[in-house]
Image (cartoon, rainbow over all chains, first blue to last red; front, side, top):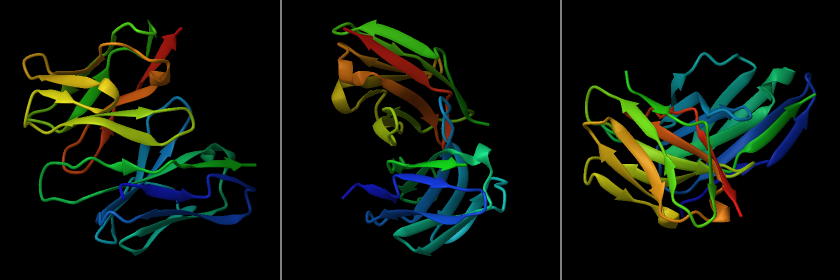
Length: 115
Length: 111
């Protein structure tokens, strides 16, 4: 199984709402990532979890709160978002190694619209 | 620092003609390089990867790329374009699990 799943596929929320995005993988990968992608732009890294611990936070506003409950699941909790946060949110996973890099496997994304 | 530059923001080809998407990289040591494809409103799919085992890398859907250290290039090619190849393509360099994306090249395939 080389699939990363994300739910929901689409999400519309108001600026006062609280919602969560969910990501799941069953490849035994110990690194998981959240990216934000605006239209016609490459993905921008938001967070990296390594062995279920937050290892990288790319100066993301606190209205985005990541959580890694176990090695297969990654959540992104959203609260008090702004319209400019509307984007495609991508989850990815990869194996970990001491040096060099493995490829990342991406999910289909959640299309978020903030009204 | 490692980075990639995709030399064309948009490439247009006719169906059945060759595809060339250009990527130059900057790295002080032998990098890990990848090409990903993204169809509209979809996630990214890995086409191929270079990790120093062979300079000519074959990927899925008939794509291949050649690593040329002397030219610091990793161009993506396909002998014959298909309508389904129309998508956004990203060249990526990855030092130590940190992926750095190029700006992307949009490929249009005309009938």
